[in-house]
Amino acid sequence: MKQLHLPDLSFWKLFNLSFGFFGVQIAYALQSANISRIFATLGADPHQLSFFWILPPLMGMIVQPIIGMLSDKTWTRFGRRIPYLFVGAVIAVAVMAVLPNAGSLGLTTQIVMWGLTGTMLFGLMSLMLLDTSINIAMQPFKMMVGDMVNEKQKGLAYSIQSFLCNAGSCVGYLFPYLLTCFGVQNVAPEGVVPNSVIFSFYAGAAILILCVIYTTINVKEYSPEKMQSFFSSEAPVQEESQNASADTAADKKSGGVSVTYAFISIGLVQFFCWAAFMYMWTYTPGAIAAQCWNTTDVQSEGYQEAANWVGIVFFVQAIGSVLWATVIPRFKSYKLAYIVSLLIGAAGFISTLWITNQYVLWVSFLLIGAAWAGMLALPFTLFTNVLAGNPRMGTYLGLFNCTICLPQIVAALCGGLLLTLFDGSQVMMLVLAGILLIAGAGSVFLIKEKN
Image (cartoon, rainbow, N blue to C red):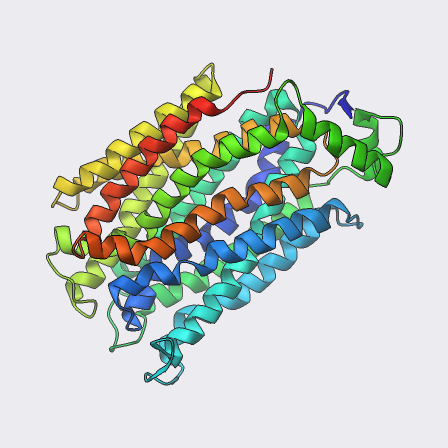
């Protein structure tokens, strides 16, 4: 299928395409910054923490390809991708009201299965459902950019999405800290999650549903007939024979780049990057508590202060991402931007080994933000440019999400063993994250950009 002309969109149309991502990312940020804290509070051993992080990427790897495939074949009066977005958001809102209350429901604190208590099992089930729903809500935004934005504007569109993603992260990361400043209780009885976290999840759920409603009202997806007018082919877009021939042609060559090669080469970079950030999400609370508060006692006031500070440094990381996202479009080469972004992030991770002042950590996480900005914008820009005009864009992007999920699963499975090798030092897991980003930067040289 040859692309004829996807029209240029105004800035505000590009903005509206991704605005709901702001609310989705608040939910994701609350999950990322607080899951280790929640399960540590519920009684999890530090060597177990990485295993709790297996479920989110596992659900993403299962759910997102299915959502991509189904939405490729869907058309309703509400659109093609938006119905999935709305359903995912509604489920996420319901789970966000339940998950942080796992320790307050009077469930058993005795070990009932796999060394886990009833409370932790309930938390795990809630986490699985939350991440499933977030994945259902998140993927349509990437697909809508692929569907509706031409190649000239795609870099800008994903940069806007990156900006909104990081803005949502800022809000989600800051909630517990700000609520504590306003007097909400930040400590709780043993095995109970503090109110500062519980109320943060409530607020995030409310913002999520409002943002998704805004997107639903303001974004009108192209109908199959309209999409047909933007592409030339011998048969209609919806015909299976055309789909099959388009897929075959796309898999062979797209603008001089094999889709399969693009998938593998970009996926290799993704592997190192997402494994690195999995270790950041898992071990930053313990690392900061040990480095800056000199405590490993999860019930202590110092640990809870350190856990709140995780939200602050993740906020700083998001600010760094927002700032760096404005720089990325200035690079003449996406590959060069990718390499520089990852190397800056690697320096940030490795520097945490020598930092014992919580304020100096801001510098480290500002640098880490550059890697995050590159990871959000550049892989999808490179891959969707290769896929331009393919009628199964959603299916391919759903499968491409496996390059995000699989490395997190591998990293989570290895986390406990690696932590043992590092003699329980959680800050060394952050140093390892920096080394992984350096490997990712080296792998960028294998990527071929579309002609």
